Image 1 (cartoon, rainbow, N blue to C red):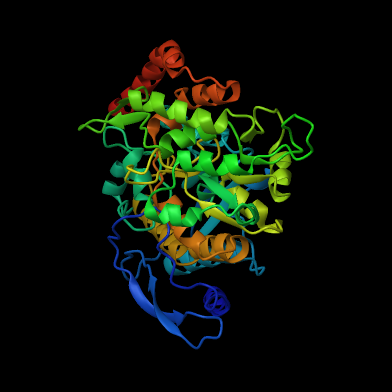
Image 2: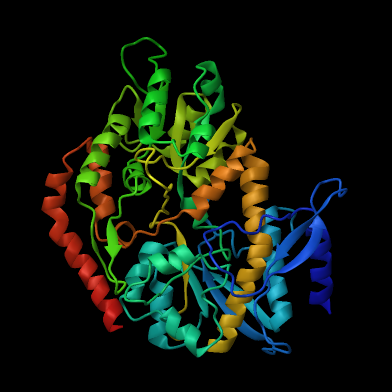
Length: 495
C-alpha cells in the first residue's frame, strides 16, 4: 500500500513535466505495444497531445514475492562520471533523480521485487564481478561498467551471452528501450554481451559533438550552422572556413595561446570521433557478423589530411591535450568567448549552462556534402553499457525486471535527461532539439574504435603530435590491431 501511494504521489508530481519526447535514443522497432495516453502539453495545461507510453510485456499476475534484484552501478564520487542512473534514494525535485526513483519504484510495485544498488569502487573496475563469479554467489543480477572493460570481461567467461539468455527467459532484446544500434553493431558472430538504452543516461554523456558560440557567429555575420546541418552541408571544410574568420591574436603579442581567440577548441580524441563522423569504419563486419580491421584506405588518408587543416593549424585551433592542460582551462576559454566552436562530449553541454553568451549544439561534421548521414560515437573509456553476470540464472525474473526498468526509463528517465536537462535547462534554442535527435540517433558503435585494440590510441597520438602520415603509423601497428581483434573474435565464436 505504501508503494502504491508513493507511486500515485510521484505520478501527480511528474505529470506536468514530461511530454511526448520519449522516443529519443537509437532504437528501431518496438516489439512491445506502446499505449497512447493524454498528457499535458504545455505549462498552462490548456493544450493536450497524445503521449506514447511504453509497457513491458509482463504476464498478468507476475509476482516475484519480494525477491532481491541487485544492480552493480557506477561509483558515486568520480566527478562528472559519478552515477546518476541508480543513486536516487528519495524524491528531491531534480528531474533525473526523480525519474530514476519513479522508474525503480514502479518496477518494484509491478513485479513485487526489491531493486537494490551497489556501486563500483571505480568505473572500469571489474574486480567485484570477478570475485562474485569466482565465489558463485550470484551477488549481482545486472551490472554496468565502461564499454572497454565489458569487452575485456566478455573474453574472460564472466558474462552471460544475451541472445542465449533471452531465449531461456523473458528478456526482449528487440524492445524500443534497448539501443538497437548498440546491439547490432557490437555483436560478433551474432553474440552479444552488452547493451544499453533508455535504462541509463551515462553513455549519452560521452557522445562527441560540437558546440558553437552564437555571439561570435553574430559578430562576424557567419552563416547559420543549423541551416547547414539541415541541408546536409555541415562539413569539416565548413568548420575550417568559418573558424578561420574568427581566429585572432587578441593581445597582439604574436603568439597564439590561452589569451587569444580560436575557431576551435578541441581534445586529441576528436581525431577518432571525426574519423567516424566522416564515415570511416575502423572495423567492418562480413556476412557472418565477424569484424575485421578496415581503417586504412584512400578515404582514411584523405580524412587525415582534411582534419589536419582543422586541428593542426595552431592559428585556427587550440588543443588542451596537446597543451598539457585540463579541460577546466578549455571550459573557461570557451565561456569567455575565445572560440567559435568547441569539440567535447555531451557532458560539456551541461557544463556550459552558466555561460553568458548563447550557444548551440551541432553534430560531428561530415567529410563532404555528398555523405548521406551524420555519424557519432561514444567514449569507450567512460560510456556505460549493461551486462548480466554469468552466475545469474534467474532467466524469467531478470528479463521482466530489465524490460520493466527499460520501459519505465523510456517513459520518464529519457525525457528527464533529454527535455529537462539538455534542452530545458542547458541549450538555448529550438534547433538544438533537432540536432540532439541526430546526435543520439546516429551512434555508430565501431568495434575497431571501441574494443581496445589500439586504433584509438594511435589516432590520439597522431593528433597530439600533428602527424599526418597515416600510412606509416598504420603499417607499424596494423598487425597488432588485427591480432587483438582476431583474439576477440575467437573468444566470441568459441564462447
